Length: 212
Image (tube, rainbow, N blue to C red):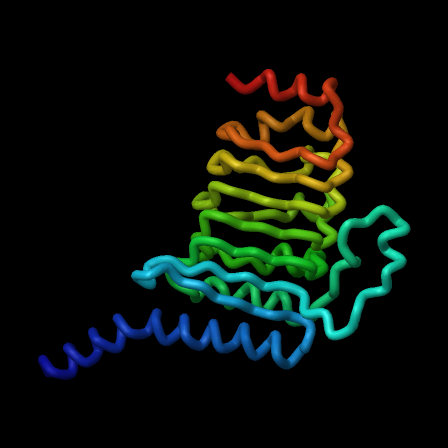
């Protein structure tokens, strides 16, 4: 009986690592099967922290016409498997940073972020994120840095309050002066803000004076 309990205890301790391995393999498989996503996992020297990057895989050169529209990057790619990949991230232990680049986001993708995700840094770059989609953000309170560069965000009014976030980037969004009006309410702990290449003027910067 003692040996059976010991074996059961060992299996229980190994189970999270087995789930993590299956999750990482599953994410790689989704990318390979779709041929539209590349997944890259990195660890620190002690294997204590893991970061993941999910980014668009371009099989052909993009249509250069996007440049005539004043866009810095080609339009994002829609990936049907993205919600599944995001859900699998919940089984990756010690995940500190998540970066998603060039993959189109919709309501299903936003809702797929697992509640068990404990990342400190999340980036969604060139994902077509709009004001409407930010309403669905339900990010863990471990997030200290949120980067949403080169999306389609005009205002931060719709995003849920995130008291844990200290660093925020909305670089390259068409965000306006009015779009920063509720910044302090939404991000009360903010100390680092990147609003370069936006539509914010000196008038909009007055909202930053509310931080003390």
